[in-house]
Figure 1 (cartoon, one colour):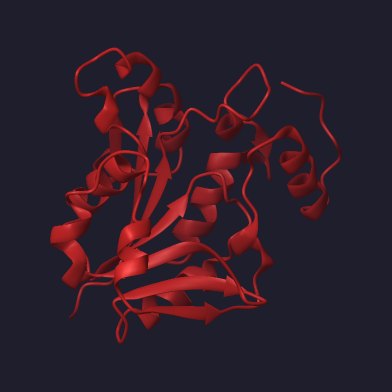
Figure 2: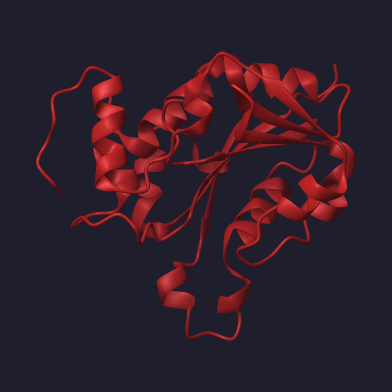
Length: 210
């Protein structure tokens, strides 16, 4: 049986735009946390899931995934003064996740702060990778996440570094914009206002800033 694409949940950023006492991914949401809710939806897709994060958030990820499905990177803040600190960022996170699932049939990149992406959306993007090198989830013509990459791009994904992520690959290869009935592909939690809006979408009462 051909290997299915894996979902790489990227949760290693510092979340500096979120003004709160704790990291945005650890904020309460959906009976769990922002990251926990994102992971619950990823796992519900029944695709393989690997989480790339840092030690401060690793315990949250461990509540949802096994140790073998967790890649813990040096904290960006702690590594900033190191010679290798410049290599950390979205690109490094993606490369680490892809390397951890090198035999997957492709990879879907899903930021950990996107808790409204539906499991069916992940499956649809994974299925489209059967015929396309790059697949981007769209809603009403706007590009969002996840972004999927076929297995043939492994050698390029594994060498990514820095904060650019995989944008140059999306620009270099013909990408399918997969139109989906899922506004969650456009919704990330960058600020307290974003979190309040997501809670409202889920029908949750507002909570005080943490």
